[in-house]
Image: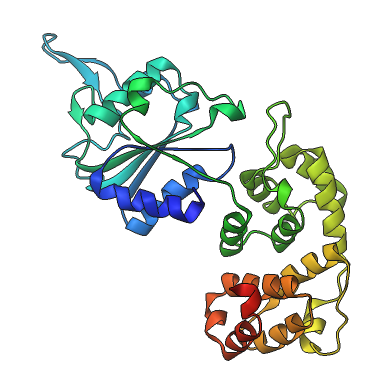
Length: 331
């Protein structure tokens, strides 16, 4: 299931409070989708990363002062019924649940099925969502206890280039990264458990885009290699060199009818991202004029990138005119 449909399904299921298990390849953005769902529903959100948790993190024995009553001290993070300091509605997300051992999974079973933790009820307005890698990815995923899996809705997230690059554009990921992944889509997610580093949507965002332009160009390959692996890093560094040698995008936009249009695919991908980044309401007509001169697929890439980056551009007359001219490609 693709990202937008996963997001909508989580929101649709929220009123039912049925537990959900979201599985997918490592680094594919599962947890961020759950978090985004809570934001769009305007509800609370609590996230616990299971590989770092112990059974004790779910409550420790507590003896009452009269020494006659034995119970558990419930952790502060738990959205217990009656707590005024926690929203009445929300999502409790257990990240990487299937990396937890059976002892932790048994504790989770009570929260998920009985909606209690050591007898303390979960708030009625809270939904339990778990995320995890697929077993076939061999990324440390344990088998989920059968009585847990039988009492939840399991959704599998599909990593898709369009979904990932749309999110990247909307969240200000560096245009060099977006353009490169359009050029080399098979490197968006290429996970091999035998490698220490792998290209995934998360590693491109957190390990590459976050430091691109901060570290010295001489250090980029080594830094990127530590995030996405040697092969992907080498290709990306080569692409960035092309990107940095592009003609000034501002000059192209100022002279859209006479500026050269390259014929090399790598350069076209790089240029598409560069001019899209510069697009504004004031110059968008010139951006569309230059895009009209590009091969159709790159024209679509440039203009759609710009409109996703700045949605107000889709309301301009320049966009309408361009869309009419390219309706055979768009639709």
